[in-house]
Image (cartoon, rainbow, N blue to C red; front, side, top):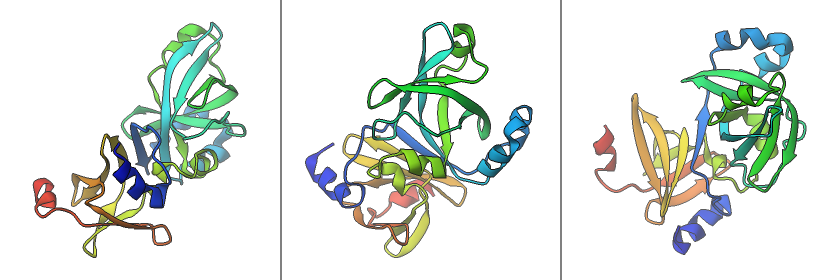
Length: 218
């Protein structure tokens, strides 16, 4: 990412970690979690929140069901105090997995073990699964410099609100913001030429888009 763009983004994000994709999800299928509602109070409360994708289970570690979790939280963490994470079994359908133990490997990776997963074979089925957490947990464990802080912000183009940022995708010289406008997916680039200002108080990102960009999608 070129220095000029980093300098511009620094005003509102301070720096950009090497995030591949950071998503915001607002819906969870409650029918898929019924068999795990032995902690129903916590789960049902969580369903009311927005969810953030924070990484992926990348490999099995050892023979007792432990997994290697590569996260995108922007800082070293053991996730101490986090009781459960959510895995997207299929689109907009999530299941809670309760954490038995965690251990830091490095700034981006954690060894994690879930309740009920006690063998390598069982853990293997979870590899390459994406991990989601409620908004409150994301704010607790993610670095304040994480670009994901812009999720949910409204893109404003020449004083016209376009929609909320649903996903952020990092590319070499820009960030792409995925919006839903009139039922259509729209990708808004943030770089030196388009980004004007970020208003954290109003949760707005002010941009000036090239003429004709929106017409490509709409």
